[in-house]
Length: 230
Image (cartoon, rainbow, N blue to C red; front, top):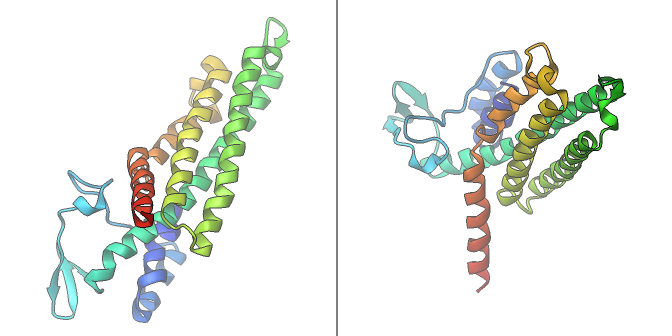
């Protein structure tokens, strides 16, 4: 909800809304109302260009299934794509934060839980899992610093957010899975934090564009850039 309010829906208004729209709508999510970003429909979602919902002019306004939209059709798609890219910067940061929490829980558990009187953290196979978690978290944190820098400076507002979103959301899934593994059977119990983290982070590979779509954005962007230099 926070990410949609501030990272996607709110940014459409901030970046592309008229002064009247900003005055009318921006205070509401700040006061606690929930904003939304209409992207999904049966048969489309990850590919926004494939959406079948249409808008038609109604005087100076736009109507779509009874809802009114004010704007320029030439900038609507660009507004949506720009806001989605910015939202991916938020998602990747959320992924790294969740991965850090999963790692912290894993280290704490490994240092205190015992097997045959020995802390499980003394076992090399457990240490290897912790090492993989730490490596993923540190690599993700580096991307979370670099991608927003490129976005803010305008150097890269498309490929870099997708790269960071792809890596960080895939990474947190692996880190959360390892966290459950470190906890053993206890990691599958609802009252244990890593069980909740494991379920929560699965959404991140879908929200804001699936991992598959991020790969298409990255690969396609690289090819288009190469063609322009030929």
